[in-house]
Figure 1 (cartoon, rainbow, N blue to C red):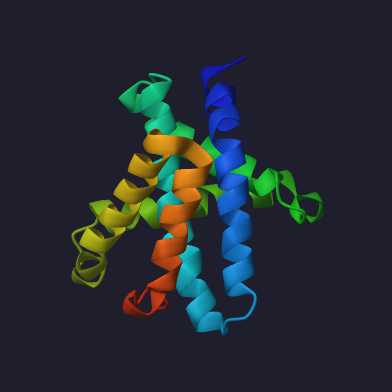
Figure 2: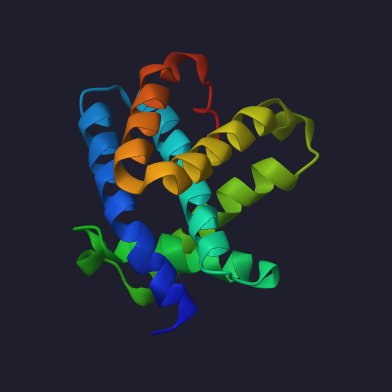
Length: 156
């Protein structure tokens, strides 16, 4: 089993439960509010992935491949994956990775106002996964979702 497969195997149960939580919260919301939660979920997942990278001793220069692989596996695990082509799946996985990457690394004034909050969300995902996996991560994400009105992520 490759290291990237092992990482996905480690995070999949937590990501699956957190995604179910996201769906239950977002189903009753307007699109703008659901988008805010979607962005919180995406950054939180990045933190979970990074925690597993560290645990599984993934080389730092492989992190971008690791993020893309985890996002791809996440997409493949969804019920709508069968309707997507391989190119679409790869495109969506790259988009999710780039969405997180640009906010934390871009110096553009637009992204600068979101950077600290996004880094906190990533850190919460990472720390909660390291503390206790699924249970602690789900609880941490739930708390964030309950505070979503303060997160103005609907513009990107």
